Image 1 (cartoon, rainbow, N blue to C red):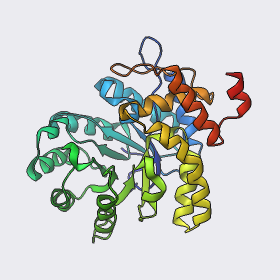
Image 2 (tube, rainbow, N blue to C red; image 1 turned 120 degrees about the horizontal axis):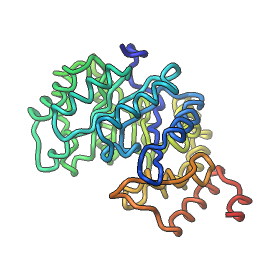
Image 3 (cartoon, rainbow, N blue to C red; image 1 turned 60 degrees about the vertical axis):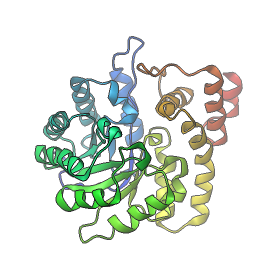
Length: 317
């Protein structure tokens, strides 16, 4: 049974990274330390695993179960675990959801199936989510992609989904435009059964939060969970001066983490944790490849500008 069964997705939810050994196997000791480091941050609501940030597309079903077991063992008694559901087919998505529930997860983050890039309709989206919902009683977070990708759910589809599947309790909003994001906030959070909007507009996080999101779910929280928690608190408290000061520290990191190509965002975050002394090495699984030294140097400069790395360490590197 889930340890945090009454959890409703809200607040600050970092999505952690997954360290690997040079042979590309999971580096369990480093992962355990990373989980403890992030979970020690004040002001968090939950931790997300088996998502983009943990390179879930490269992980087998058994590896995802192992990642979940490690997370539950290390931090499950302190924070709810949000388990990602990454699958191209609905039957596999349901199998992962069932295993996540049995393993003690508190919520599910459901990614859109890749075939939707070729086209989708409301009936397809509802069928996918119904299969997941039928496999567990956990609250569901819908990962809302930008509409131009083909994997985002149009407004009418999204409304039908939340009407017909009561376990949908939040969306992870990566809509990509202010207008779409604001529609989500104003429409979904003001329903008779509210659906929380969790921002993952990490390249413009402060702008996103001031629209009224009920939380944020971001991979960069693996590096700056404290700054994200403080920013969310400042915005919730209408402390504009504090929010702007925190945003000034976050901005250089957002600029480097979310540069093109976007697929390298978590690759860059691993390098940042190495520079900060929180990970021993930044190994990624193919098709990702090691970053060039020039890009690692840019990450180092961003960490210094954010006040997270001293100039002495920069000069010694």
